[in-house]
Image (cartoon, rainbow, N blue to C red):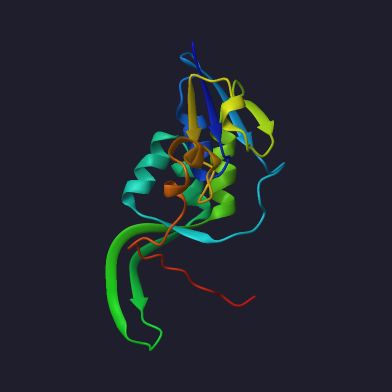
Length: 162
């Protein structure tokens, strides 16, 4: 049986841990936080993301707590509308998504609460870096040239009052 160490217990790490076949893989999930965060951002789940959530078996419970989105307008700081996408999306809190993914992880997955700094000490057939923008796994494999850098990608964020 192959051993897999997943470094990072956020959205990607939990989704992978939930999806891997426990009959084929011995999985260890390394996460530095002792508990899932209770607050955070909201995420728009477009149809492709919803299909992935369905494959993990968590879409239906998330639909009960998510907010349906049928269009998504985007505005400039100056107040000019520059896009209005029609979609079958869902707005979902990161907290709810993490909880659903965490619940989908099989009991066979070994969980280790630690910050992985020395990737080489992980004795696994496969090491997966799901440890974020400052990934220790990526840095160990590809060195400093793989450090985080500005990319030509648009991230849409919003702020709501309390």
